Image (tube, rainbow, N blue to C red):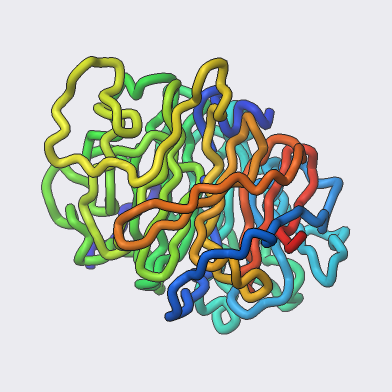
Length: 395
C-alpha cells in the first residue's frame, strides 16, 4: 500500500447553497439491509416528525457508533453534542471551535466513527481549518465515554481550497469494505472554472477512499494508485458538491448539489471504482452551459429534479439515507431526501436499476433542512436550521 504524504501538499444558507450549491455526513457503518425485498406501503401509512432536540447551533449531522444507544450531533461552529435518552448533555463530547474556520460554507461538517470504535475508540472529523483548507483528522475517546480526548486530534489529510469559501463537500463515512470515504467539493465559485472535478491530479470534486487502519495508506485497488499525474486517493470523480452521501449495503447513494438548474442522486455499486459522475461537463443529465457536450465515459444520475420556475421544486438537494430501521417496516428500502430551499421530506425506491414510488410525505414546514441523521438502530432524523432535530416516525 502507498503511504500518504503528510498534509497532502507534494450562515446556514451559504453552508448548503453558496447560495446555490451545497446539500446530502459521515455516519456509523451502514446498517445491513434485510434480505427480503421492500413491499408497497398501505395507503394509510404516513409519516410525521417528532422533535428530539432543540437549542443547537446549526446541527449538521446526527450519527452513532455501531450498537450505541446514544446519538452524536455535529454543530457547525465546532462542537459535537451527545443526545442520550432524549436529553442533550450540557458538556460537549468534543469542542474544537478554536481550530475551525466558519467562513462561507466552512465549519465542522461531519464525524465518522470507526467500525471498531467500541474496541479502539477512534473517530474521524471533516472540517475547514482557519486557513480555509479541508481537514480530515483522527481522534480518540477519553477514559470517559462521553468526552473525547481533544489532545488526541491528529491530521491525516489537508486539502488546499484556496479560491472560494463554498463547495467544501463535507461527508465522511465508512464503506462496507471498511475503508473511509470522503466527498470533496469542486473548490467553489461557480461552474468549476479551474476544472478540478475532471482533473485526476486534484483531490477536489472527488470521492476519496482511504485505509485508516494504523498508518493511513492508499488501498492498492484504488483505481489511480501508483499512477503518475493522478492522485491515488481518488475513488471517483466528476462531483460538484457531494454534501451528503450514504452507503446502503452494496450500493452507494451520492446526492450532488447542482449549479442552477438540476439536483441529482447518483447510485452505483459500492465496489465500482473510477466512476466519472460528469461535472462540469454535465449538470444532471443535461450538458452544462452548452447545447452539446462529450458524454463519453460519464455516468449520469439515476435520479434528478429540476429547480422549476421560481425554484418551485427547490434549489439544493439535502441527501439522506435509505431506511433500514425496524420501527417503520413499510418504509424499508426507500431513499429519503430533502431540499434546503423547500424543507420537504421526499423519498423514492431504487431497485433493479429503476427509480419508482416517488413520494412527498407532506410533513409541513420545519425550516430549512441542513442534513439527515441515522442512529445505530437505522432510524432516521432531519436536522433543521432552526436548531432542532426531528426523528422521522409513524403518523
